[in-house]
Amino acid sequence: MRERNFIMITQKMLDTVEKLQIASRNISKVWDGRSSIIEMRNAGSKQWRQMEWMGFYFEFLCEKHFDGIIDIPGKKYGNTEFDAFQAISWDFKTHAANTTNHNVITNDAEAVANTIDDYGHYGIILAIGEVEYNDEERTFKRWHDELKEGISQYEVNRINRGAMSRRRKTEFALSEIHFICLNNETLSQCSGSFQEGFRNADGSPRRTKVMINIRKIPDAALIATEDF
Image (cartoon, rainbow, N blue to C red; front, side):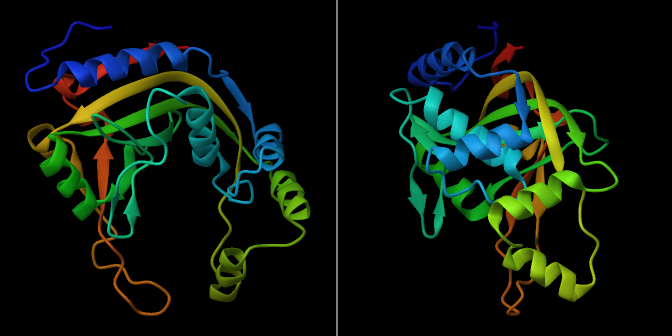
């Protein structure tokens, strides 16, 4: 564990992070897209059909390796459910290191504000690593579509809009996992809003989400880092 300024960080939170950090050492370093999707499918996960498999696979791994340390899923605020709870609410997130974008979209802004009011902090377990992308022939996408026996409604809507298909991530090489605990002060130093003013397909306004700039996360909020 790194020596940090733990003002307002409770001992229970520190104990939880220490257990999570130790358990995270059993997480595999390289995640192949095909193998990860099939593993989720064979284990009965409902998320193996998702295009952005990387984030869902990390959630899958957290459910496996953090069992008995944190409660999964976590607390619910209205329609928003956090990924886990132990001492505070936690979310599991992934981020590609080989990108110019340093923002991570976390959770519903109102729910984050409410859980900080209730427990003092909001936790993020953030996996960072380099990704590889689908080739120009998009063979990975075709493979995934065949495995799903068709394309999703999301993909149908994209085609109807005439929007271009995003290149799929095919592999993730894990380099580090950060354990972050944010209070109102530290959150304000690294966050902005996302989807503010956006609307759903039916015209209803989208809920504003918290967007974290990982390069601006204060040292006081970074409780531990596990390197791979």
